[in-house]
Image: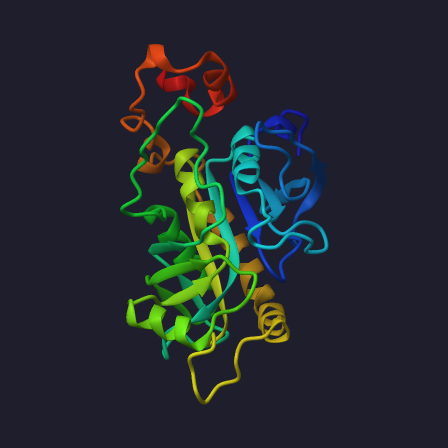
Length: 292
C-alpha cells in the first residue's frame, strides 16, 4: 500500500458479531480511535488491506465481548464508519432459525427486518431536526445480492431472503415468544440488526447482513434449545466460510456504485431549514450538510 493509499476510504466495512472478533486475511493493519457526537464506537476500528483493497473491521460487542446487544453504541459505530468514508457495510451475525429449512450451519442473507427492541436509540436525528427516512426495503438489494453470490461461490448452504426479527436480549426467547414470531412469518431471529441497519440507511450507507444460523431458537421440539455454547460452536465452524466470502466480495466489488441507499436523505428532511438549531446542524453536519 502506497502512502497515498493510506488516506483512501475503505471499500467496505465489516461489523463482526458474536464469535467474530477479528478479521483474518487483513494485512498492513492499524487500529483507529474515532470520536463521534454520540460517543466512542464499541472498539477501535481496524483498518487494513484485503485482496489489495482497503477494508475496515469493527467488533460490535467490543474487545472481549464486553457489550450486551442493548449496550452497543450503534449510533457511534455507524457514525464512525461514515466518518471514515465507508459506503458499504456487511454485518456478520449469529441468528436463530424460525424455519425448518433454515438449518444450523446454513447462512441467510435476509431482505426484511422487524424491530422488536425496546431500549435503544433508533435515530441520529433529534434536537430540532426531524427526518423520516424510507426503509420499505431496509437492506441494500444490490449489496445483498453480491453477498449472496460471494457466499454461494464459497460453497456454503445459503438462503436468499427472509425476515429477521431483532429482539432486545440479552436473554433468549421463551417458547411462547418463539412460536409467536413463527406465526408472524419471521424467518430468523437475532439481537443486533436493529437499529444498526436503520442507522446505516440514515447515514446513506449500503448495508447487508450475512446471518449465520446457529440454532433453532427454542421452538423446535426435537432439537436442543439455544445456548451460548451452541452459538459459538457453530460460528467457529462457519468462520472460514465467512472469511472466504468476504474476500470474494471485496475482490468483485466495483469501486463506485450508485445506489438509492446513498441518497436516502434527499427527500427525508422535513424540518424547515431556517428552524434547524445551529448546534444540531453542526453536530449532524457529516450526515446532512450536502442537503442543507
